[in-house]
Image (cartoon, rainbow, N blue to C red; front, side, top):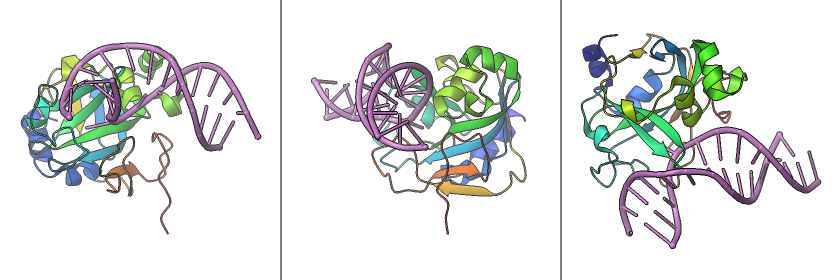
Length: 188
DNA sequence: AGGCTGATTTTCT
DNA sequence: GAAAATCAGCCTG
């Protein structure tokens, strides 16, 4: 999809974009798959990097909708976000591997498809996402995003690995997918 | 199956 | 100096 169409798609609350991205196709230089897990981070959200205003690290979060925000996590991993309205973004937490599986297996050092891209750090390692993509416009530079009309049933749950605003059910997943980073609690 | 810990580096207090 | 939107490996039971 063209960059301007992606910008249009992302120009709304992260809370709207996050579930809408379930089922979308994500690829870097032809290697990727289908998004099965996301999390929303809003501008007024204590768990968001943007909560205390713009800094050197989170500058990309204040760029136009459709910008990629990539940051280093725990000093080791990379995490990939899609910027929505300024100061808000969607963390892509897992994809179902589809294209370039051989290359992803090589980068990850495991042939376990279920865990190949299940988690923000694993996903970035499999797709070779790093700081070079931070601040770039999705739809350019080999970064491909193709939203789909119906990604199937979407389930929601609590976000993972945060210590603030832990009660917001802003984690979204494709119902029944085996490729999510952690199971979603079943609701009655 | 589930819990703990080390790795590693940037950011903010 | 502590915490961080994590992960893999090793421990126990």
